[in-house]
Length: 418
Image (tube, rainbow, N blue to C red; front, side, top):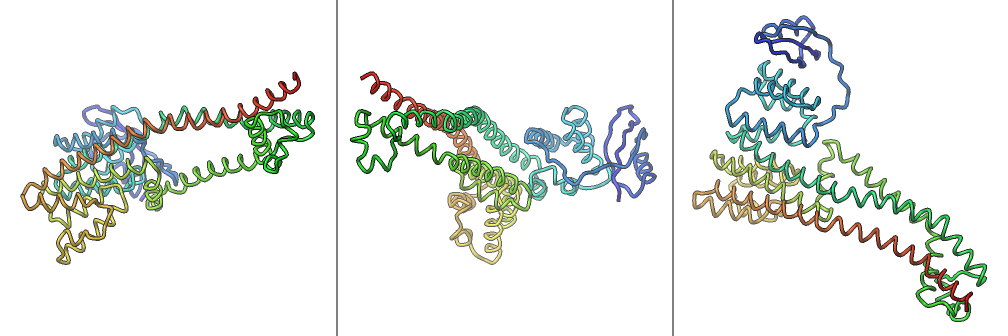
């Protein structure tokens, strides 16, 4: 079937545009007229192989509005079209109209989202299905909104903290390369002309510094030898720096496709600072969705499966699936979760204890808030530590080079004046 872009007008006079899947242009025109739309233009759509996903801001807006419409009982087709008329993002507007068209054609929400899943995070369709299965789609989407706000806050924190140090680092890297390639060799040549040889680590180790550069302070000798060493091997330092940047860029590109989610998660779980935020936020999503399932009376295996699908973590989903299978096989929760370490032992304890008391939903809600608090605290810690760390590191590098450049010259000038 082909896709057609159209513009039209409702009987009420409201104008809008969208896309429609149909066998032919005539069939698309007939479908639109049956929907009560007076067609103005209708043409075959041009689609490219790569469809850019929604930005995090657009996704958060869409998710919060969809949750609000679901909770308020607003017909989704009408609500999506009204929302499309108010948003400024062309990408989000196009998506809203496309979803509205699919809903108007009789497609259920989870199927409509699945058909445009390239616009969403890899686990979003699973979240919608989990919310529908639990009977509280609005609650599931509000849980996603909490996770998205944490993610957005974390990314903005990293941008705020990283942009200034990155700009300083780029400037410092250019300055250091200029100094090591243009200035330091001239200083070393001046020392070589005066003493016949520049201080080197090998010469200092052999004891030659006592006779050749006896008037230079030990610190000046050490810094001069360090500058000589760095000037000789500076191309290696530049190569390593460029290689690390290229590796980081390659990993970022490689892990973008959906099929590489497991690799991306493995990297996120090992990056200091980021790992704590990712772990706490995915646990919060997992626990929040589990609470929704508990409110709606889902059996424990189905509760685990729904929560795992909505967690945003491949590892949590795999472990939840394994535990659910063991429970279906007759094992109690504590035995089914034995040997598993991704889903916290605290979660298992809360489920067993609160389930026995009959207040599992409320207990899971409180636990989800605990994990959300951990994620927010981790974001705050990153904000406090990352910026000063990079500034101190870069300032120390520049200070060392400048000190190593000036100190031997001062000692040389003192030798000449004496």
